[in-house]
Amino acid sequence: MNNKELQLVNHDQAILLKKVGFDWECCMRYEDDRLLKSFFSNHNILDDVASAPTVALALKWIRNKGITIALDGKYWCKYQKCFNHFEEMLRFDTYESAESALLDELLNILNSFI
Image 1 (cartoon, rainbow, N blue to C red):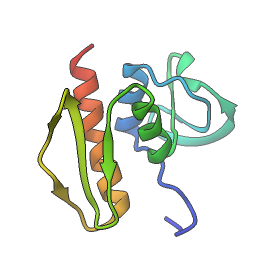
Image 2: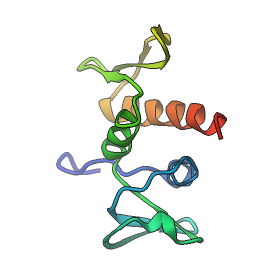
Image 3: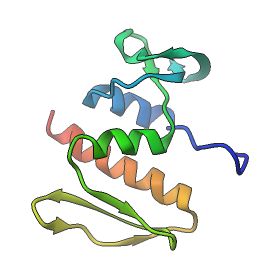
Image 4: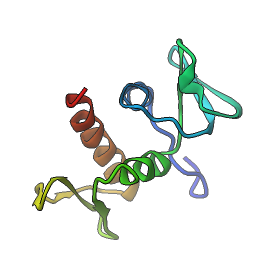
């Protein structure tokens, strides 16, 4: 990944995002396991396609659902699952790996409520 590019969600994350209701427009999508560039749209309305937003956009969508999350400059992440209960702080080698791991954990939590 180029330093000027934002990390896209992986295929598994895209599928879980679709399952938990991600409905924002983006210009990338997965068809099967192939990542394809497309026009800006909510690709999740199609059966065999999943929108592929950036990890940052997916996390913003989750924050807009009322879940408090945080990452800091030293690549620690935490999230608030329920009222005033913070999970253990985790350490990662890069900011991008912290973002992706945080997204994985949050998607698993959201998926458990479906």
